[in-house]
Length: 314
Length: 315
Image (cartoon, rainbow over all chains, first blue to last red):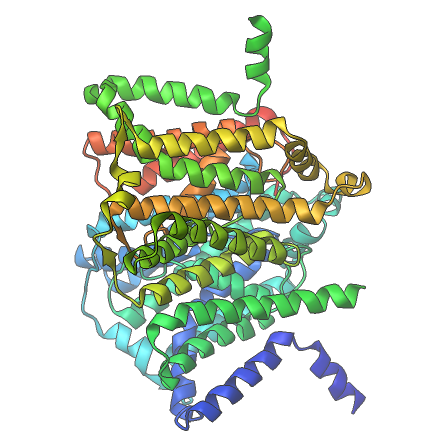
């Protein structure tokens, strides 16, 4: 019995909030609690989920990567652009992911070697990457028809959409990297105690660059998944996701201050944001009100979390 | 004279100043129409909103905090003001309400920043503000405002746009407040060493809150001016300014760790950003390519600035 209690206590506070919000929406709309709606929520959450996994790695190093959304948009644009030039879709996907790894590495080099705050370095990169996407598309969406999108977005495996499986694979990958590899220990060390890391003979700069490159890799995958959802290359499709990903990461209990937390909590954070959006639509709240409501709920959730942490320290 | 040069050399914004001068020289060479007096006035007019926003934000950065909500706050308050004026409220009263709203927003931001990392707290309020702006406007656009109001945005006193005069007044007030008063010294002291400031008996929470209030009041004024200049209000009108404002302050040499820099540097930063955009427009650079140039400039300036002064690990 005590064991269960301990386990419940270990869940991030956001999971309780999640239950509360689901309860409110189920009372407000009878259509809410249905299997098909939950399947919808999972599909809607997938691209942001993957981006949030990337952001979690960066937040663990006490940084934020504001270029992640731009990288996702860029990947969708790049794949379609190459496809229109005759490059096979899968080859294009690999090229796009390699390019986002490159963008991530450049971010890492600027942050680690240039000693610039991650927030400002990646903001600059966000502008640069957005610009490239806009130039490639002349500012509008570009299309390339293919069955691959439908396969990823609509077919299922064991009743679960393929897209969600991809997110699950990314989750497992990030989890294993963070928990079971030396690189993962170093990521956490970068946020926790950088001095100890360099005393142990590990280069903080090299690991920081690797972390940003890793985040770029994940953002590239998010780009591929997003392309399958929107079936076009859109230069601004993921703008703002980087911030939602930060919010989800913090909601999930990863701390910006001390290198604590992990990707498991982030899942709850992303689900919270997606469930609020989805619920507001189903209940029929006018879209005019939605931004303010979502923002307030995210703010309140982060605040409660922070207050609980401050209390427990005292 | 040599003492004066020495002082400029030591100041945080020395490299920004060199950057600005270099930029002006290059611009005059590559774009002949850059050099005209008309274009200079245009640049000042284009810079004024950014100047007001970024001078206010400087106060927040000096304490080592961050306010990402300035863009949305400007949009929100601009919308409120337009709505009030459209429904017959006298202009001065609408203006005062706008400023009070700014103070309230700043107070909320400052309070939240005491609990959360300010960067996160104000991103969330940014979201809420832009949502509130949409609610105020009910999804529509307000246009055709009274002449007396739009004069603030498009009018001239002599050869100088009213806009530029307002911006100059605000910049000077903030400069004096932050550089020449006890309050200003407290802001710097808090930013360079919060712990020490606390033990020397300064009301540190009040200082932090007050800088957020200054910042949001400036955002409010900027929002009302944007409305006057556009002769219209639209919920999204402040969005483009949010991170640009941060960029202007940082390019101007104000440290994001607090305690270093000032309004003088910010003016340089805002002018650099505005001139770059102005020259790109003169040369007909595609608007899609412009963010790239701005992004490269932000990174380059900050790299240059930080690495010429300190080799300290910084993130």
